[in-house]
Image 1 (cartoon, each protein chain N blue to C red):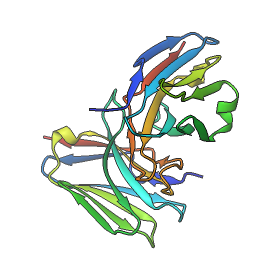
Image 2 (cartoon, each protein chain N blue to C red; image 1 turned 60 degrees about the vertical axis):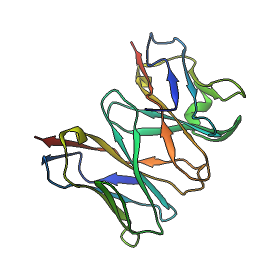
Image 3 (cartoon, rainbow over the protein chains, first blue to last red; image 1 turned 90 degrees about the vertical axis):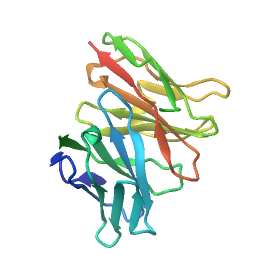
Length: 113
Length: 113
């Protein structure tokens, strides 16, 4: 059973639009949710993260909206740029900081100029 | 730029050969994780350490896979007898532990011919 699911394998938006990437999870014990950005040939880079006590986390053009009751979250990328074209992974952990992280299969975002 | 250093970036092995990858975690991070990312972008947790001690590992690693994080030396992941299905990107990540933030290296891409 997949613990973390990303609803879209790929997403295409125009430059300047808001890209919305969705994620859901199974385990109610998960309380820490990072998003990672990965470019081809590189390792994943931590983009932004939220803890389950919050329902929103914003960092520049990136915002996470979190719904604990529904066990889902979304990453909004405002004013998308071609340089944002990458694969985005949602992850989850029962945050002791020592536990295994579970990853979704990623959403490949393409931003068209 | 990643502060988790992985070497080598690429390795090519024949079936049955040993494959060894190394990782220097970010300074001050006592927790180290190894993940396997396959061509479908799926992350598979392999093992994690706190300092030199194994915290968690999957069954697979107890057979052909071995890993260690000796003090004052890089961590390593070794596959004793490589199989075609082992071809993947092997990612090392480190964490302070209590914050839960996980930082990845660029990965070691293994190709088993």
